[in-house]
Image (cartoon, rainbow, N blue to C red; front, side, top):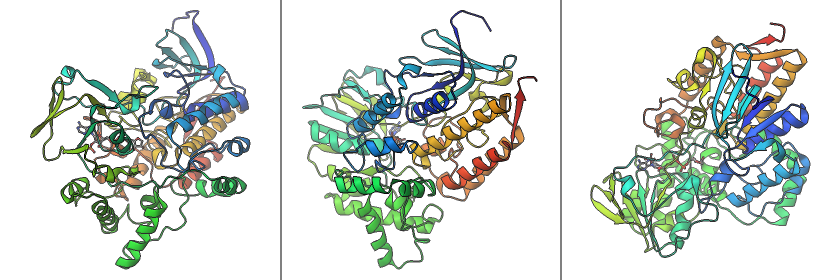
Length: 542
Ligand code: NA7
């Protein structure tokens, strides 16, 4: 290691100033008195909510639930304007958190981590950045997000296209004027399903390029009322308790055990009730077996298909918008929508079905499929992310024996408890692979990890330990366990980003620990209480 005078010595370096980086910084700096720097590639805080400024970007989890729990003052003073907050409001919330907890001074913006290498002699991480800064940190904490690395397909002729091109996850600050323009959007995932209804109202004509239809259900957003807000705030601790104890960090109290136990009428009435409740009601709150049993799953799939037919005027278009009969429900991320299906009743919207006629090429002014040519002035990619591992691999993380994380995970992620990796001492991932992560309410999943990491570092300081490392056998057991749990569900059957299936060449493994947040939290807390079972430590004397 060169002893360049530019090297800055830290206790911990955190990557990313989204929900996780901000809270991690607050805990380590303000509770543990550590010397911490956050490196953030954007010009402001917010992470996902900084970048995803596309029209219609909104959280599908209720605002009061999708927020930090750690500060009673914060949750009492912040007032949400809608039941499900839109991106600008969530970004304002995170900016408020930054200000309120004075986090700004420890964040370096407009800077990327270009390499992070563990030095086995010094037991420290050497981190280099795009601004030629170098840091030596005892702890390296990538808080870089699970859905941060955009995935854009290679389409022949892409460089020939002379119109405007946008990525939903890199939407320009200040927006894009689509008035009078012919717009094409590729993708019909959760992002596009939010964006399409808004864009259709604004532009002259919208062509939606759909490869796979999706089971979406209504969000049922509404303005926040004072009564609703007051009522939640008077009972916030109860709501939080219910969130922490629930499967996915969102309390649903009407979950019935089996869709197959109810009569057709009862089942339809229950699905209708959850449909009217909105958000993830059907997915997570209707019947406990729909994500485990194909027959049960089919009842939910059929219900949603029938709703699509009710809402779309042209039966042929309705059929194209319905997922195919063998496509299971909810094992891809369930999108929530507002007026999505009605948008296809508009005269200025065309659905291009890429299943029957795939994308062929782009020309200077058009998108060609195998059976048609669509002239567009603007092309929008809503084509998803290299989830979980994409943002980690970009940082050039290198652990013991010079092995990169990408090499170590070449057959799929290997972690212990979804928060550490055995060959990478003193590195903690936040909501990374093999933790509940995206199948739990994210701010709570984040707090769960940050609290655990801060407690672990505190334990190390107290016991004069400088290095923590997951034991390979425990890591092996965790990898096996996460797979076994996933295999009890229907999730592995999907070609989803949960499975890495949307990225060519990515190993096909289920990336989430899906036993439920409460079970997971009990496991990681038990291991900690048991003197960090499964970890080895080095004291400063070793
Ligand atoms: P998703 O859910 O990965 O959706 C991406 C969409 O883009 C999906 O409809 C894909 O079709 C489509 N896609 C991707 N590549 C292509 C190509 N080459 N040709 C045609 N269509 C393509 O990403 P989102 O951003 O919508 O959602 C990600 C998460 O962000 C979301 O779940 C929330 O948690 C927040 P496919 O289904 O692969 O056929």
